[in-house]
Structures are given as C-alpha cells and as structure tokens.
Image 1: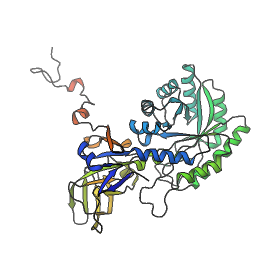
Image 2 (image 1 turned 120 degrees about the vertical axis):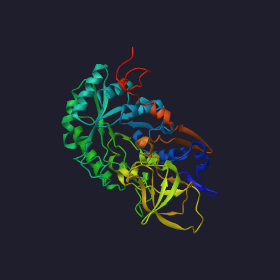
Image 3 (image 1 turned 90 degrees about the vertical axis):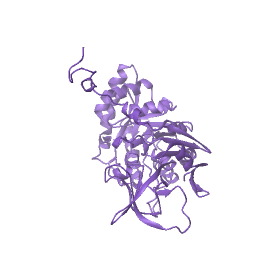
Image 4 (image 1 turned 135 degrees about the vertical axis):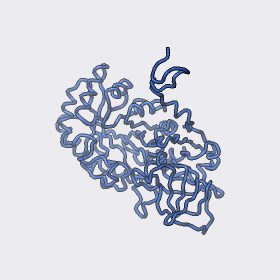
Length: 436
C-alpha cells in the first residue's frame, strides 16, 4: 500500500496534488510520502513482534537525510556500506548503537571512522578485513563487535546482478570456513565475536531461498556453539521483494509471511536478530514525476519523450526493471490507449523506461509519474550528460518540503577546476608562459 491516489482526477501524494509540487520545484522530481514510510516500518515491526529484533534501514536504498530521519524517529537503526552512508545516518539522528557497517570493500580509513564512532557492529566479509579491523581497533584502544558474514551458497532466484549469496559471488566467507575464521577472530585483542551475518540478495519474490538460508544459519549456529564459539546475534540482512506492477498473480510474500518464517526457522536459537530492509520500506513510498517534452512518431513506433532520463532512474536501463507509469491527470473512463515507448532525452538507446507499454493518450506538457521509485532511484542517480540531479520532496499530510534542491549549472561547474596551465593567461602574456 502507498499513499499516492487520484483525488478529483489529479494524482496526489497524501493530501498534496503532484502538479502543485511540479509548479514549485520543476520537473523531474522525486516525491516521498511520510505516511507510506511510517506504515511500511510499522507493518514490518508488527511482523517481527515477539522476536528480539533490531530493524536497521539499509541506507543504500535511499540515502536522503529526511527519509532516514523519518525512519529513525520510529526507532529504526541503519545498515551502511560506506563512510559516507555512516555519516549520513549519524547526521540524520541514528544512534551509533543502532548502526551496522556492511560491505565487502571497507577501507582502513572507513574502519577507523566506524570504530571511533562506537557503532553497534561491523559485518566482516573476509580474513583480510578482519585483520585490518583488529589493527584499527587496537590502535584506538577499543574492542569492536563483529558479525562474520557467511556466504550460504543459496540461489536467491532474483536478478543476477543483485544476487549475493551464491558461492561465486564476491560477498562473505564460505559458510564451511566460518569456524576457522571465527577461531582466529577470538584470538584478536581488538575483536569481539558476537554473531553471524547473511544476506542472499535483493528483490526476492518467494520464501524458499530465505528458508534454505535460514536453515543453514541455524545449523551453523549450533555447530559453532559446540565448537566453543558463542553466537548471540544473527544479522539476516534484507531482500524481501516489493510489487512493481508486473507480477501478475504472483505477488511477493508479505512481511507477515516473512516474519512467520523467521519465527519458525530461527525463533528458538536464543539469538538477537538484526534485519536490514531497504527496498521494502522505501520503494512504494516514492514516485518520480516527469513531464512529457514531445511525442515523436516513427514508421514503427510512437515515442513519448519525457524530461526524466536514465541518469535520474537507472533501474530500467541497468536491470531491465519494470516501473508502472501513470498519468498525473486521471484519464476519463473508457479513454483510448495505445502502445508507446517511454524514453528520456539522454543520448543512449538504453535511456528507455518502457517499450510497447499501453498508456492513455499523452501530449507535450502532460505530467506522468513512475511508481515504486523510492528505492534505488535518487540513490543511483548521476549527472550524466551534464544533467543536474533532480530535486527530492517529502510530503506529510497537506505539507511538502524540498529536502534536496536541484543544483544549478553554476553549482555543477563549481565542482570542477582547471589545472593552472589551462587557466586563462593575463592580457599580454604568452600562452604557456607564466607572467611576471
């Protein structure tokens, strides 16, 4: 469920008509609903009731400070994968004691920063990282709690670019080597072993891969405890899929079904459980609103050219991902529809949002909205083709606020500088020779 709906023929975010926001900030823009963010968090929390559960929002899904703060105010922690995300979480008000640092390639500088902030735990993904973290903690006279990320060799049955739990993936330590690595960790003065971590992929649309991974984690906990390695915390990652509109009669599992599976498989381990949801909290809470630039007819296709592009919403180009596209002004009942390609202005054939999608008639100047765009939309955006990053807006009831402004061209150019030998020469000086 989300809080975007037509009212009097106009698509609204909660109580705010999207055309009002378009007039205020221009297009394209991202719009997030506070009510949806809050509802999704509460639904997950209710699904995990009765468990010793800590929900750490995966910041990589949407790193906007206002989004993080909305979830933090409900009690969410943060799962971060870089120093930048850690700084964002702290700036948004997430307590260090509720922050988990994941990621396969943490640098020594990032580890130093995380240790100094006293965060909840670091999910270690290799022996090399473990040694580096031990040195970082000892250098500060600290002991850092860690969970070892194990690779359970489970096929998540998701897109090959977002599966993370198979043996050939770069993530984690082979589950069969966990005891050896953790014994080494127990001998390190800067390390406190607290648990295991496992995350098998993103946008999982069935429960069987979770069941298989949880079973492996459960068995591994028992083996490690027998070997004298006390495991008291399991970080189960995230990955629960969300409906994008192309699922037909096979929607992803509900949070309630996921919670029931967790209780069935791991509820009796005596472990505290950490969850790292990202997409399921923010995807349906966001829309990307764009304006039609023109309609282009060719011999074989009809193209709807919009002012959003692949640099604003990369998922269709990167993952062949589907996003529902809806007109902001509700079409009349029985309005004619036709097959069109929805494309952006970037000079790439891949700058295509939809091919042969059935949509109502659209004309230059019309507003459209890409649904389920709150996750991995603005977070993956770039300034490709020297296009400014799009603004982000947060709605709460009948109010909206600009929570990230669109940079102007001068601000974009100010990020760069010419080397001294390319600077314009003072009047009368010879090119390439410094004046005196």
